[in-house]
Amino acid sequence: MEMRWSLNELYSSFECDEFKNDLAKCNDIIDTMIKWSNENLQNIQNPAKTIKDYMNLDMEFSTIFERLFNFANLTTSVDAKNQTALNYCDKLDIMLTKLTKPNVLFEKYLGNVKNLDEIIASDDLLKEHSFYLKELANKSKYLLSEEEEIAISKMKTTGSTSWSKLQDILTSNLLVDIELDGEQKHLPLPVIRNLAYDKDPIIRQKAYSAELKAYKKIDESSAACLNGIKGEVLTLSEMRGYESPLAQTLFNSRMDKETLDAMLSAMKEKLPVFHKYLKAKGEILGHKNGLPFYDIFAPIGDVDIKYTYEEARKYIVDNFKTFSDKLANFADNAFEKNWIDAEPREGKRGGAFCAGLHSIGESRILANFNNTYNNMTTLAHELGHGYHGSCLKNESILNSDYPMPIAETASIFCETIVGKAALKSATDEEAFCILEQSVSSATQVIVDIYSRYLFESKVFEVRKDHALSVEEFNEIMLNAQKEAYGDGLDHSVLHPYMWVCKPHYYYADANFYNFPYAFGDLFAKGLYAEYVKKGDSFIDEYDKLLAATGKNDIPTITSMVNIDIRSKEFWKSSLDVIEEDINKFIELSKKL
Image (cartoon, rainbow, N blue to C red; front, side, top):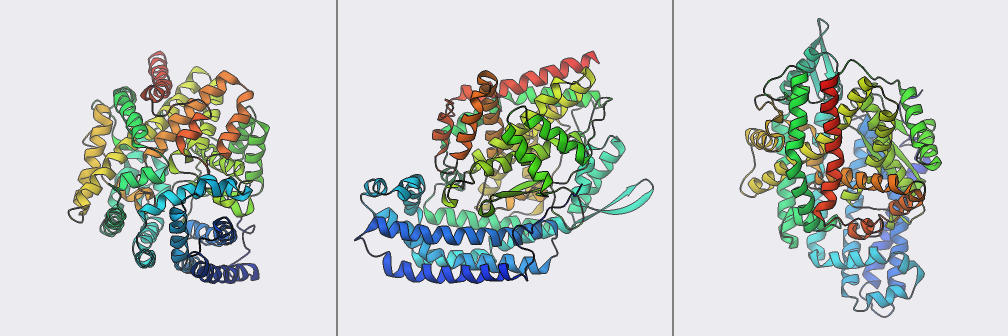
């Protein structure tokens, strides 16, 4: 079965007439929007018509631009040296900056409309986009002058955007020197990181040591990238009047500090439970001082659960079907139509992601599949993202953009479906392995995410004063790991370079892309508990919730299923589910 995705549904090539025509059309729409905004956004005579006219232009542009951008960006994701794709990524970034002035004018226009609620209520299109319009009006108070916004937009293309691209190129092209089976090899970073799941402890330790050594080739460059990005974020956040980058992230996430504090407080209280799991795993593997970092993902138990790519497809589709035919059919179609690029190879970025292609009602999924149970659940996770997008495909493109914390909901819900199904049919030996991998994943989403939150918070604090050295980044990362993992890890064998290999730190427009994973995991577990209680009647509620995520704030979305996310008790109840799995795992470890 094909393990590389097809992008032909977007364009056949950068040279095809359709790509060139859409590129020209985008430029034409931009010229129209610039001229139109200069002529009409000073006029308050007919605000309903003015708002609608701008929105229609924006929707037309966004639909075409999204298609162009995804084709270029997805191409570079699997071929980091594709110069044509890289050039078009740059051109499209520059193109987007031309819309800064009309967008600023429109947001300020909305912010100055006195009776916006009445105007929205007067028209069906405006009512459909009520949340979108009110959110833009609210954001307008953080806008700078038109000239400043234009200058910032242009400078970002040679600032944070370039730093982010450089980091992506550095990690995508990094070859790691390692000796395996008596042979010296030069392997891509994603391949080396996947060896953390290898059954052989010597290979895991070799891969860890080789990985850390390889980072020295790019650590100074990576530090320059991260300093440049975080410095820019701090400067712009302060200029716009946000209290901090975190405050700006929460605002953009449609989430409040009360919710974040409730969740983090519950997570911190439960850390000793995860430490207990890590120490138990360490003891099973023969470690006395906690788990060394290179064994965090070590498979344990006598059962080595493996899947071919075809078997992973069947397992996922069959178990998605236990929830709904709609979900199963979506996943099967994604495999059948080659929406997934699963083959690890040189020049391809590591990790996994799902790109929603709203313009054509599809998704594309990047993974680095190596036949493990964990990789199978990763595919299920990313297909959950794709399903989320499919639930939004009938919404307008302006109502399809959901905030970071809610982004992980459908993915972890799908991961939970697969994990629960695996446990139902498992022997004690298989259940032990499955539970371990489930708890290991939860540990990443709770404990490691907490360490990343601590790391990024401290980096922003120090970056206010000066650019950080490689040694400072490493020290902050080690301190964050020690605080989050406690005595669960061996403090002499940690991972100081986790800030190099995690791309989220290098997203200037998505800071603190860490706590949303914890939010998604715990919220999804709360949703799954609702599904267990309500059965099939919950399925329609779930789809409606996903479809509403682009046009509501998070408290409103979660209230649709009667969940109070400002309550610490809700987060503790979701964490209790993980604690039950940890206790089962430890119980089985003593039994087997």
